[in-house]
Image (cartoon, rainbow, N blue to C red; front, side):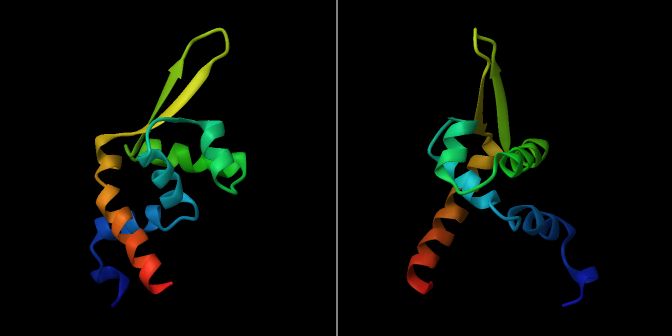
Length: 101
């Protein structure tokens, strides 16, 4: 299939979700709100790359970043409704991977 016949929205979604670590970051956030260091310690990913992916996901409306102004600034990440809508897809991919990989 030539690229000009692909649905542009599908192509954009696959480009975003196909980036290394993106699905695993979303998978971490499906468990609930997490701080940056919690995500970083759960995955073998550099802080720089994690920050980059979180910014991309925030820009696309998949992740929400909340800054809590306390004595030590606390930043938390949570999935938006759009991000939560990926739950079934990710669960099915996880189920498929256990069967075929």
